[in-house]
Length: 154
Image 1: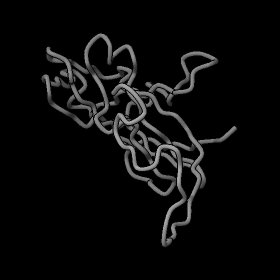
Image 2: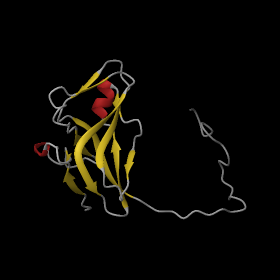
Image 3: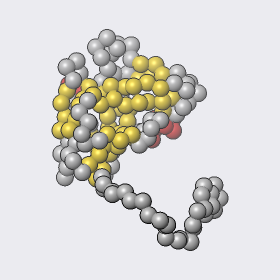
């Protein structure tokens, strides 16, 4: 098991707790909106087509050889059109700044985020580093240079 270390930002509401896996088989741990004290009562309204950076109140240290991926919550996506426009968002092992989630409203109605709402999920994943080389020619494959939609419909 990999350990992700967290620290709280100074104004964070620590009663919201750290990310949590909702079930024993969950791949992603839920992240909560941890709004600034002046925003907690009103929350954040995201209009259709708009984006907002939602704070979590956390910073983290990810071990070298791993990343954290931020992903949408399926229920919010289906019911309200709430997604993460850069999904999956990657957080590198050497980043130590505040953890924020870019949330987009792809739905048709405004969406309200309340302090403490579960807004995204984080997945811890191993990273394979590659080396890169220029060669004279590439090997042949059955697909060759066939691009988008070349292997069937869509």
